[in-house]
Length: 166
Image (cartoon, rainbow, N blue to C red; front, top):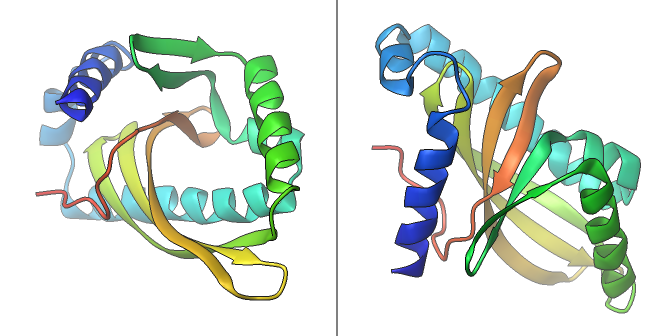
């Protein structure tokens, strides 16, 4: 039930992000529009995995919308670039205590919600310094299209593996 609440909160939050309601935007999209958005968001997701592996915190923060959304047990929190920078510094301090070396991109399922919004379900592996697989998992991210391209707006906490767009 907790994850259902996240999706309701996410839906209510993003309903106000666009100038035109999502349902009206979807009606004006054709298959080529959807395919282009899927390719563009998939490329942004692939770039995200490489950027995270680089540990370049300014480049990582630049992949996020401003503000970004963090889901918490009692609601949502808006994160500034400074908040994201502090979070990633902590993340990389913790990862330095592990054998983690890099992540590998195993593909994406991109669900297009409107011309300016999509959810990417990303399949990845975390690889150790010795080349072994530490973890194979999935991340789910809300992407919004900004003037300078597609940006991650929220990480969506869910136990799902790859999402099904239907």
